[in-house]
Length: 259
Ligand code: T3D
Image 1 (cartoon, protein in one colour):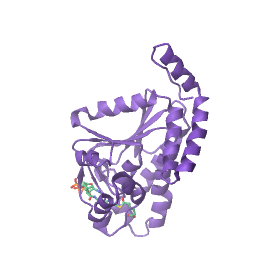
Image 2 (tube, protein in one colour):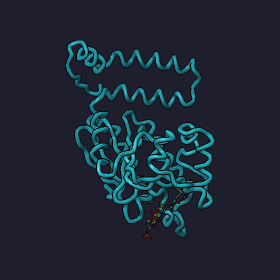
Image 3 (spheres, helix red, strand yellow):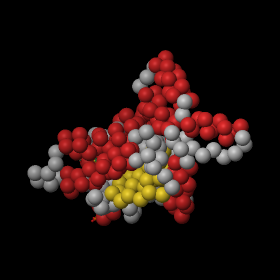
């Protein structure tokens, strides 16, 4: 397995670490395929109930490796988008488990948009975000034009994408772009606390919640209410629902299994 994405598993949490620190964890083809392979394995492994995506060293991810992208006879834009970023974004959105971006440093270009596509994004206070694309004459990709306006509204999203200005972690929280920022010294501990809490929750219902959220980005109210009804009936038949209600009535802590 490629060293470009490191894998660790603790208490039901898979930690995937982008590992090309000298290139600020920018994506080459090897790392893109390694991440896809790891995400797929995490999706299939029942012992993994939450996923953390983070970066090694000073950066979270600087987007596309611009050296690889500009090599003579190198990979085409079409391949980069169709075979790397689009499948990565789709995998993050369709894995029926919480995917947490733990942004340990700068997140730029596709790196930023991967973080925004995750279910929750938690950043080090010193981390920052930039769209970067406009500075090199590209348009945003990796779902940026889909997620950003939905997260922060058209005006702020447009400014971010046209200006590619640097957004601090605190600024990102204030505008609703990410969930949370934490002091640098507490970052790893807080990330693991959040991920472990998620992994202990009724993760079958969390996966279904994610599907509902995805659908709610496009559906009209009638369709969404209908879908919620169907999913609620399915959730009410889960072992976790039985455990949750029994634990509540018996005044004890529930032990959810994600089933
Ligand atoms: O084919 C396609 O391009 C289509 C796909 C597009 C998807 C995209 O993601 S396009 C956007 C690509 N990313 C960027 O344009 C970001 C480029 N990087 C930066 O703007 C800055 O490096 C950062 C804002 C991310 C960080 O700035 P700073 O000052 O903290 O660090 P630095 O000194 O610029 O970079 C540190 C090292 O990382 C440096 O290496 P060196 O000189 O010490 O050996 C730099 O070259 C390397 N690095 C940073 N970003 C990339 C990179 N190497 C390759 N590709 C990068 N994207």
